[in-house]
Length: 116
Image 1 (cartoon, rainbow, N blue to C red):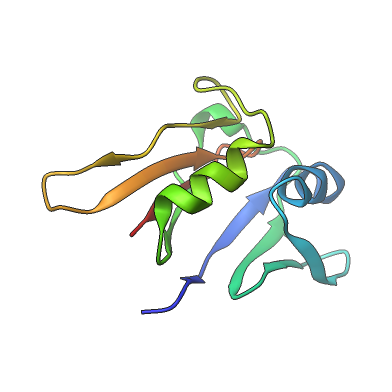
Image 2: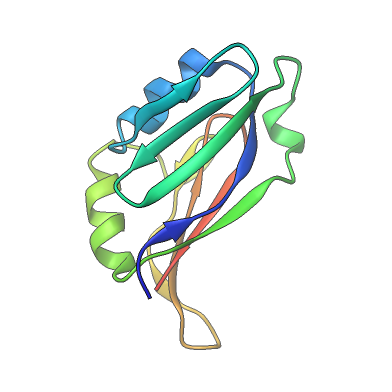
């Protein structure tokens, strides 16, 4: 299975979202006033504007399936994100089903479960 992501997530600010994901290696593939697509290789995430959204109450999430979660974590750790709060990144761990995974929460409060 190759790397892939499918998500439609809220963004309080497209500029803030571009800056955050840009530090993770994503670039703008499309942007207008009502929609934005960011891409990093085969990984793609789409955003819709939601300026009044409260990140602390977010229930939005997506699964990011990759060939090597540890490698992706090492790359994204370079962005200097904290381990708690919003935004944040957690260390990889094995779950009860044998999946290797870590979590990334973006500034909009959206959870990306990154797993191998």
